Amino acid sequence: MTNAIQIRDLVKTFGGGRSLFGRKANEVQAVRGISLDLKRGETLGIVGESGSGKSTLARMLVGLEHPTSGTMLIDNKPWADLAASGSRAFGRTIQYVFQDPVASLNPRKTIGDILDVPLRLLCSYDSTKRALRKRELIDAVQMPLDTLERYPHEFSGGQAQRIAIARALAAEASILVLDEPVSALDVSVQAQMLLLLQQLRDDLALSYIFISHDLAVVESISDRVAVMYLGEVVETGPAAKLFANPQHDYTRSLIASAPRLSATDSAA
Image (cartoon, rainbow, N blue to C red):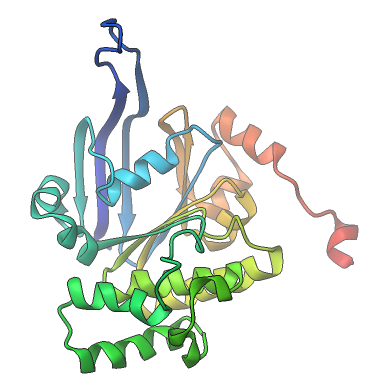
């Protein structure tokens, strides 16, 4: 199985310049020499507490932050080449699904207008093809056709996240970075969203980086898991194996602290 993403010795440092008063500012290494692979058609879950570097990694992958050092290949393309080519090259290769779906959608535009942007700017579709593709996208995320005529504030969080996923799919990228995509949703809606994501991945041959602090969610959707701690990847492995037999002390403490259903709760 070939790689959709290959990361080697990636570092991201913030600060280190001069402060307002001329003193050297402290450097903070948000990501410290990590190496990871995402296989094609795979979901790689990334877990860790707040401040572990998960979102910084995600933002680098989609071009919102520049790495300090290290290398990344995205769909066999060097990250630096994608960055030099501009946002369109990133958009056609890899897409970001944000944690807050409503905030990520322009409140002044209809859903049809929102989906029109990537179809026009990234895919260069004419108006006829855009209209057809928008209907296909809304159907793919299991929303009614009249969604296209409505505004973001008219939808629940779960519905808005489906629309955000449709927007990501509009660019026809094969890789999605999902940054806490279900954390703002009710548990029952989370389950529906995870099933939808799995179906889309299988139907469209997508590859996912799935970032979350919720271990149960990550375990349910991921093929493999990487555990981040203080900017480093401390453990990786197949999801079932990692959760059943964690090797690193930090992974063990994460799993031990996660809430789990008791037999009584499950029966109820």
